[in-house]
Length: 175
Image (tube, rainbow, N blue to C red; front, side, top):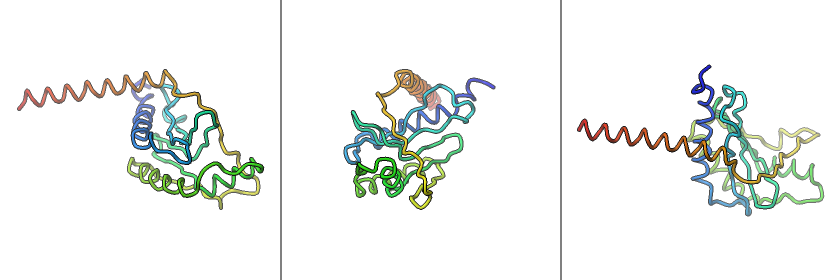
């Protein structure tokens, strides 16, 4: 298996993450920034480890995982507000869910549209799917972007820029 094939899905994942960041990077959902996390390694093992978490981050607070995207299978999941709030209340009965229903609903519509526009088959996780024992809401603390991931993204964008410049020069010479 070639390195190019092994990193095909990771490259797509970096691009999807960058596009998501460009669209939602300045948006806040109850003080939390939506992020589609970048891949953690240069290879997704031919798509086996291609899931990217979709989270709401807030400085100094744990991130709340609200879904995922997988560029290898072209599938994504978004969790409804009711799903997230139900799981949160079961896991943290003494704490209210720290996200506004109205703000999340607005973001949810935009995120659904984004994922569908980028070729994802969208699955919806609703509170009705939660059994008597709720799965734990994935809460993780992110310390910031992975420097190695940022370097790979910069290299990918630089390569894309070179290809565009070469194409432009070729068009000018052929014109």
